[in-house]
Length: 132
Image (cartoon, rainbow, N blue to C red; front, side, top):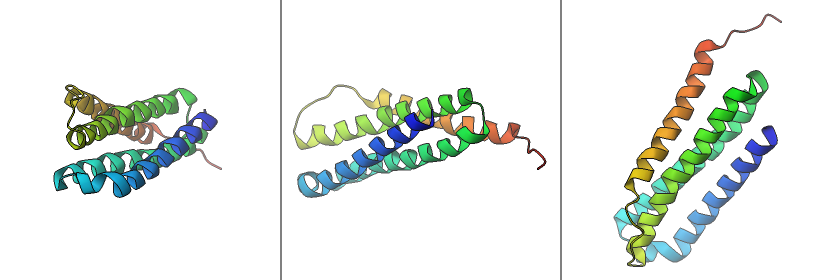
C-alpha cells in the first residue's frame, strides 16, 4: 500500500505544480479575477491533499492497512471530484464552452475529503500507545 500511496501523492503533486505553471503562463491572462481564484483554490485542494497522502504513508506503519486504504481512496477520489470540476469551471469560462452541471461533483468530492479527515481523527481517538 505504501508504494501505491507514494505513487499517487507524487503524481497528484506533480500535476498540481504543472497545472499551476500552465495557469500562470497560458490561462490567467484570459481569466477574470474570480476564475483565477477558483483555479488557485483547486490547486490548493490538490496540493494539500497530495501532502496529506504522504502523511498517510506514516499512518500505514502504525495502523492496519484496511484503515489507511479507506483514507487513501477518500483522498484520491476526493481530490479528483473536488479539484477536477473546479478546473473545468474555470476552463469553461476561458474557452466559452459548457461542461455540464459539475457542482454536485465538487460537493461529493468535498464530502469524500471530509470522510478521509474524519477517518484520521477516528484513528487518533482509538489509538493506544504501546510501552517500549
